Image 1 (tube, rainbow, N blue to C red):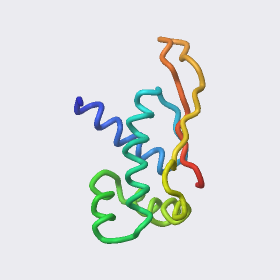
Image 2 (image 1 turned 90 degrees about the horizontal axis):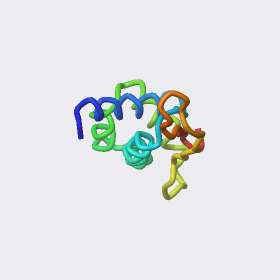
Image 3 (image 1 turned 30 degrees about the vertical axis):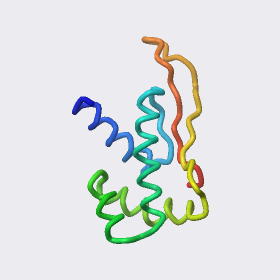
Image 4 (image 1 turned 120 degrees about the vertical axis):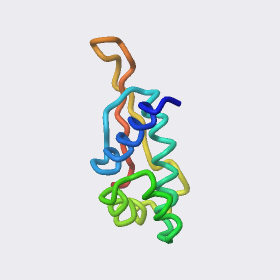
Length: 105
C-alpha cells in the first residue's frame, strides 16, 4: 500500500472515532473499517498492551474517546461495530460514495 493511502486511512480512522460517522468512497471505507473494528476490539478490555497498540495508530484524543465511551458501549457485542451505508455515485467522477458509522455511539 502507498504511504499516502496509509496516512489517509489513519486520518479517516481518527475522524470516524472522533465524530462517529464519515463520508468517503467505498474502497476507503472498507479499509478504514478493518482498522477501526480491530481497535474497538482492543478497547473493550482496557489493558496497558491494548492502549499501546491503539495509541500507535491514533492521537491521544481518539484513544481517550475509544477507551472511555466506544469500548464500554460495545462490551457485549461480538463484532460488527461499524456500518457502511451506500449513498450513490459522486457527481464529479462517478465513484461510489458511502457513509461509514460506528454503531452504539
